[in-house]
Image (cartoon, rainbow, N blue to C red):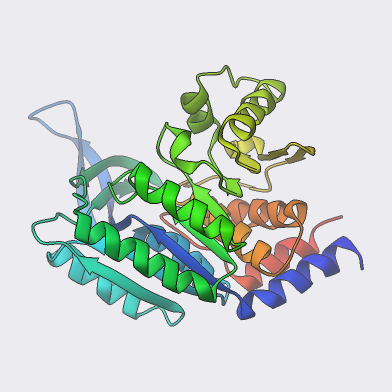
Length: 327
């Protein structure tokens, strides 16, 4: 079977996959308008608003990507009891293949990221959020739910956006338990302390996140590889997939290194591209695909979404079209 046929075969198996995704839920709000003048009050642009759009963000965007590929995903997260939480629940209800298991936390502000955009240019992002307070009762609920729901999935994604859901004790306990059950654990990291991800099967930092976590110079491929191997050896993480924007990706393990050139023709917006990478890689691994094939599909998917404006997803039709272009 040639490379194209192998990739097509993996995509066809996505519809039979069931992934468990746990993480921080965020509401992404996009405010679109036009800038034609400068404010007389201060040297700032004035945005005349035309429209606004709401999209599932954070781990919700990981789930959107899985759903767009016709995979099924169980979503575990915690939200407040505010209007933002209601909006998130409504958006989830519109996704046929996302099964939510959400814990409502009193007096918690559900995170919102509001982006103001003129044309294709993002002018400003405003975040409204607070760190989630994990009580012992909530911790036990999270642990119990993830342990139960993981029985239905061979792959578990932890989408960490640093909003408080993943305390070190929670993640370390879960990763250890999932490893004992033979589950594949994929981490989309935000913390600069990679020890909280110890024992994971795969971690997907961008180059800056890797540099911050290990305090290594990551200015060249050789130095990035050295930093990744440090993470692998120190934290017993089996694989590190480094996303490098227009420079593509690098997959590093003790077996060696694989490089993937960027497939993006034009970059409009990198928002959510990491979510797409985590989702695609997890889906691919759930089908039994090799790591190199999974990384290649993730790279193709990332190239698609960065060519779109806003927190976007790729779909099977777009993926197949890009695979046809492989020589």
